[in-house]
Image (cartoon, rainbow, N blue to C red):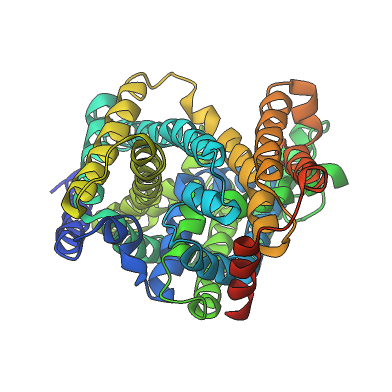
Length: 500
């Protein structure tokens, strides 16, 4: 058999495994609460691995190693910032949000929680946040489908449309039938596959080069050769500080602010069995994140030494992880490593499909639609997943579209629009519905403007000014609009605090 045949066998086994998990989850889903939150029965290990896998996407296995390969460890500040942000999210947001969403009308989505938290009779908070989620995540899902099509085109010389539809179809199937439980369980398998690949690839590469000292010498030799040929473009890739100003480092680390407002991440907190599970979830999730981020960083760095020592150059630095696996492993194992890249893409798409579905059904349709039976609610949830997937697939037909450029923009948009509001909702009694709405809009607008002005974008990642604007506007507006305290809001806030 050819190498490509072995790789296709490995990926086919991976696809069958994902479909099998979705089939199992289908029979565990009987209500909308089951479909959207797995009945709030997720063990901390499942919630932690699912949150990590659904968040990281293909950036972890391709984007980060490629950035490290090109520039050096200074690019690792993004991973450091994300890890710190994820830790703070698990430490401070997870237990309170899990308790508060249950205390406050058993909310199963972020928009429904915000409406219930502030007793917003106008429905403006729920509708606005639901529309923000629906619009941004439809494009976010589409970008994942584009990535799937490009992956098959680059790895197997398959037609882009075939690869895109195959990835979209498999992901849609297990998400459509398995719901949140199916997405979460497949995320666990995908997270473990990503972990194994990111540990094994750099370790085997170092072993093949003769050891750690030989690898470091090869990296330094590569930098010396580059600096000799390009004196105006000096590199010191083993330094965390060289090549970036203090402002650039702060900007890179500020990616961690986005965690507080990512709907597909914080929904995992809402699905925990209890707020007490957040502690175990934090340890598992952050442990996983440190390992995979470290593996991705060292894959890019070690790749510098490996390809320099072998006299090879990379046309696309983002393929360093894939090429190392194909060179150093049996094609069947290399196929499993390729499957890890697909896992990163598909785990994110499935989680985002469910958040879009919940926004469409729970936060928009049910406001204006009639009351539905339990089975009708689940059916509508599945139809929501299907509708969003079809729209996203139509947007992804053209691989040259600008959809992929929206990914970083959407991360900043969600982080700035929702992050401060979530934090203030959980820790500040005086936040009002008008304050939350005004802050949400301010954060989204600042990100939208800042992120589209090149000079401002070069100065600072747009999440920083957006996050600060949201927080400031929310606080000031709340102090200006606050009247007599709502007794029910105060009672629920106190009840939430008593569970911590």
